[in-house]
Amino acid sequence: MTIGITGATGNVGSRSARLLIQAGIRPRLLVRDPARLDPGTAELSEVVRGDLLDPAFLTAATEGLDALLWITPENFTAPDPLAEMAAIAAAGAAAVKTSGVRRVVLISSVGAERRHGAGLIDGLAQSEEVFAATGADLLILRNGYYFTNLFGNLDELRDGRLTTTMPADRPMPWVDPRDVGEVAAARLLAGNWSATELQAVHGPRDLSWGEVAEIVGLVIGRKVGLDVVPDDAMAAGLRQAGLSDAAVDGLVRMTSGLRDGFEPEQPRTPITTTPTTLASWVAGTLAPALAA
Image 1 (cartoon, rainbow, N blue to C red):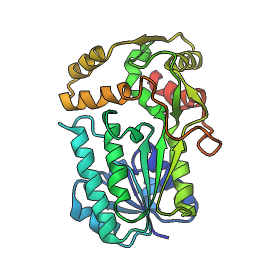
Image 2 (cartoon, rainbow, N blue to C red):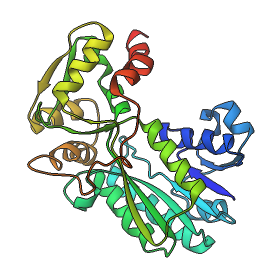
Image 3 (cartoon, rainbow, N blue to C red):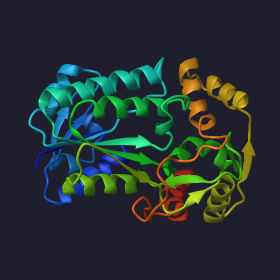
Image 4 (tube, rainbow, N blue to C red):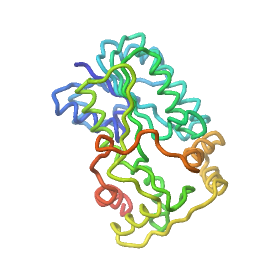
C-alpha cells in the first residue's frame, strides 16, 4: 500500500505517520517545511515538499497513492482563513480525482454537520463536500475539541485564568489529537469502508469548560479560575493580537455556532471513545509547556 499524509508536522498527521511506519508502511508525506518533521520519521518516509495551495504539486504528489490522509490546515494569520481552507480543499479534491486515489480519510470536526454558521469549522464542512464529490471511498473523522487548543491559553493559564465564550457547565467532547492520529492510521491500514462514511472521535468523556479548568488546576497544582466572556470581548482580544476581521469572525463563530442546543450528529459510543484523558495530557504535555 502507498499511503500519503498531509499535515505530517502536526499533532494528528505526525502520529499517523509514526504508526504507519511501525506497521511497515513507508508513507509519503506532503509537507511545506520538511525541517519541521521528526528526523526519524523523515528518514523512514518519502518526503515531498510543496504547498497545498498549488494544484500542480498536489497532482504530482498524489500520483500512485492507494490512500490519503487529508488534513485541511487552518491558518489563523491568513487574511481570510476560511477562503484559504476552501481553496486548499478544492485543490486536494481535484488532485484525488485526477490521480485516481481510491480511499481518503478526511480529518473534520464536530460541528461540520451544521454546514454553515460555525466559523472555521465551515471550512471543514466544505472539505467534506468536495472530497465526497471525487468518487473516492471517503471516511470522515469528526473530532472533538483538541486538548492542544489549550496551548493558545498558555499566558493566561500561567496567571491562573482560563477564558471561553462557552457556558461553563456545557459539556462537549474533548480529545487528544494523537488519539485521532491513531484512529486515522488504523482505518487507513484496514481500508474497510466504501462510498462515504462518518466516524466521530470524541475522547474519553465530554467535559465542560468548568471541569477543564478544575482538571488543569489539580494537575498543575494551583487553582485555575474560569472567565466566561461575551463574543464581543473575545473578538476584541483577538483583534488586539493582530488577527484580521475574517480570522476573528471565523474563530469566534467556532464556539458561538456550537452553543444554544447544538448536539453532535454522531452520538458517543465505544467506537468514538478514545483513551487519553485530559489529566494525563496536561501532566505530560501542557504542564511542561507552562513551566518553560
